Length: 538
Image 1 (tube, rainbow, N blue to C red):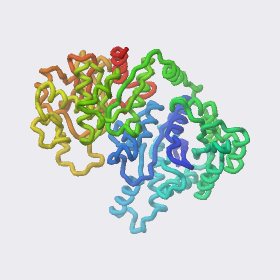
Image 2 (image 1 turned 135 degrees about the vertical axis):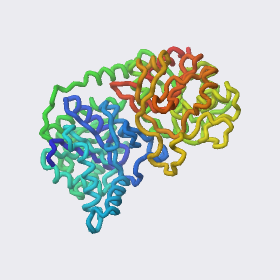
Image 3 (image 1 turned 180 degrees about the vertical axis):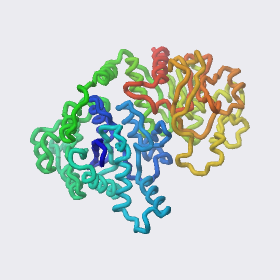
Image 4 (image 1 turned 90 degrees about the vertical axis):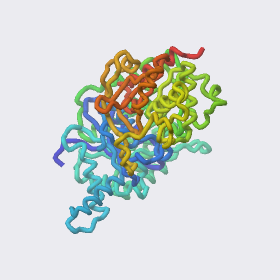
């Protein structure tokens, strides 16, 4: 390996959902704050090519990159923390690995050899480990291995990590193992045995972790750290305490306090390129934790029982709220539970309403009722993707009087298809990776709420949809006050609609939440929160 790039691998043990993605993003932030160029990638052990066909209840939200990759939600954390765009290369699944190898086998690239997990699958995994670091663009590549050590599906990845140590050589390779130290309330004792077993599994696979990061609800006493160091064969100062935090954005500072970045620099023989600078991050945290006002926003969607389904939207409210020093009290409301009898009770106390993205007709009429309420009662409204389409359909039905107006997604035979399948989608029969995906240009109408929010008239935003605004109805809708304030310059596709006679009523076909970061809060979210402040219920 000729590249000077250093590689860090983060594995997890004991249980899933410990926060490998947040630890990876936090370490990346600390290294970045020292002047190093960092990228983070996620290797997922499931057989799907990507999460694009997965129900959000299975895997949380599907995050979309600039280049149109449907990826794991952890890539959202990487972008939000590092303020650097990710790509298709930052998220690899077992499905993609096997697909690549089988495609090569069908082409005859293995010269008649028997194709096996070792070396062919592990070689493909390793080539993807190294891909982002090959051109020397990054000083450090952090690789998060999804799942838990010991999972059957993770075994090829763990073996590839073992082999990577020999490929890369000493000083270029580091393994951080994230584990859980449970607290037994009855015994009033922190237990290290699960971590010992987890590390033992790693050792059996040929990997000695260099650093242990220990998730815990209670501080780790010195004797517990010593025990972990002794039985897990790591240096005492490489046992890092990761206490539960008030906010994920506290974690970089907690890891700095525990000197995680210093241990990494020491082990990789790296030196900072500049003094550690976290002033912007601390400023953000200061505004986040000391709001001067608060608002109550309702997020109306169909996947609300799993908040991770709307992870980027929720985090966008955090970023934008801090920007205007406002605490956003977000209530997730199931659109299935909203109807013409109870909408006033469900929505009456909200200062602003966001109708979330989604697919299919479950909960659709509840969203229609929600938009009608927001429009008629002048409540600040923000519709994203399907939320924008619902706004168009509601307006067509209740203002234009086009009874039965709908999207052809919900009703293929509707007499008034104000939302219809995009032309290029009509011949597609494969669902995975075939939507309108990634970054597209949008021209904004001067003086519109969108143009005021962005402070410019040309923007780029990310998309994930199959259905679009039907321009056959544009003149009718605009004549009654629903204005197309943003359009794609090449196709004329309507990207943004606004209500002319409403304090703040904006629907967008794209997903603005994907580009919101700690240091660059999304402008539409900032203006929406400001509108909610102005509308605040006394």
